Image (cartoon, rainbow, N blue to C red; front, top):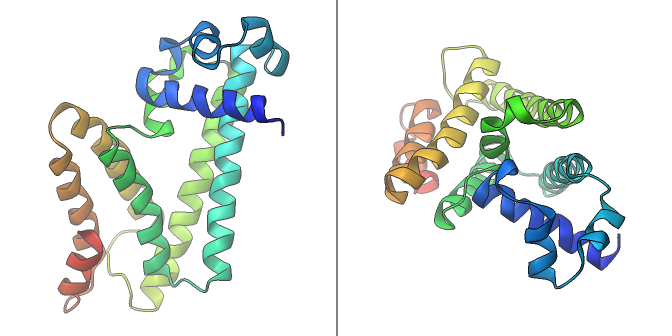
Length: 198
């Protein structure tokens, strides 16, 4: 990947997280980078093409994170903790996540972008469901609903929590984060929940 193409992807993602997909143009990118619009179009002929590339890049990063955690023999609790730290970082930086940002623009996204966004969400939900099921079998987690429902609850709390924290307070997201841990922590492990949910 060329340095210019990578920089365009990074900048466009930042713009999506801060202004929304419909809130920026190629002019915003070219101005910051000090290049012509034609240079952006060279790498990404259309904004839809750019959006699809951003989504595919994020899925690739997610897969690399999962593979890295598996290679380091992280248990299910550590894997979930690592995933949730991504949202804590976004909260500190006053950002929302890509799912939350693009989700608000879903009706105006192209079909290819909607397909890629769906794939991304499905992949994350499937992974969450898997580690929640496995972690429950090992006694690391405790919850009384199907793992997929629990996965949906966790992801929706994280996505919506970042959006609410922008309106209310960053500390409110920390409370949401803590409540997620408490909802899946077996009795007697409250200290562990507070440690990881802090």
